[in-house]
Image 1 (cartoon, rainbow, N blue to C red):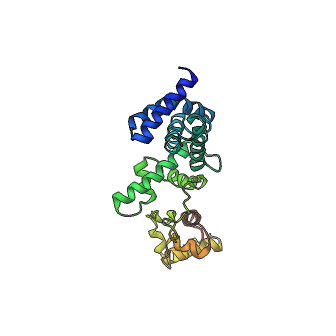
Image 2: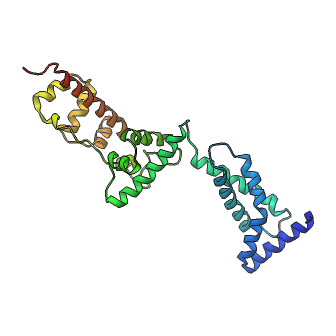
Image 3: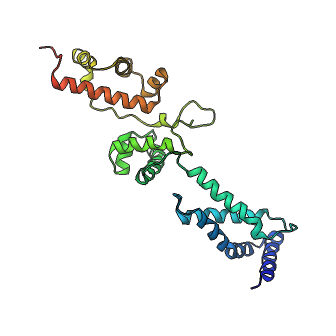
Length: 253
C-alpha cells in the first residue's frame, strides 16, 4: 500500500470511529499503527522496564492520540501520535523509577510486600505485622524489613507518604509491630543492669516503649525520628541488653 493510500485508509477509519462511533474501526486503526508503538518502545528498552510493558503503555498513548486527533488537522495521525506515545512511555518510567540503584531481587520483593500489606490489611482487618508479611511472602523477617526500607528509593510510593490527602497518618504507621519475647524486660533489677549497656538515646527509647507504653510511631514523633529508625534502634538496644545479661556482667549475685 502506497503512503497516500495508507493515509487515506487511516482517515476513513478515523471518520468511521469519530463520526459514527465504530469501535471496530478504531481497533483496526490501533492494529495498523502498532508497529509505530513497537518502534518507539524499543528506544526505551533495556532501562529496567519489561519491553512488553512499554508496548502496552505505548498502546495506551496511541489510543489517546486517536481519541484526541482533529480530523481537520493538516498532519498525519502517525505524526501526531508520536509525542503522545512517547509521553506515555516517559511517564511510565517517571512513575515507576527508583531514585537509587536497588538490586532487582529487592525491587521485586519491595513491590510484592507493598501489595501484601494492602491484601493482608483487608484480609485480617488490621495492619499486618512484619512476621505476618514474611509468612505470606515466604521470606525471612529481615528481608521484609529491608524491602520496606528499599521502598523509600521508589518515587511512587514513599512509606512516609500520608495515607490520605492532608492526613497525619503515614503508610509506615499502618505496619503492625512484632515484639514477642521481651518478658525479661519486666524484671526490674535485671532491666536496670541491661540498661547500663545502652547509650542515653537507647535507654530513653526503651523506657518510652516498655515503661511508658508508647508505640514506636509515638516514640518516633517525640524524638523526631522515622518509625523505621526507632525500630532499628530498639532492636539494637534489646540485643545489647540481652548480650549483657547473657554474659552475666553486672548481675546481682
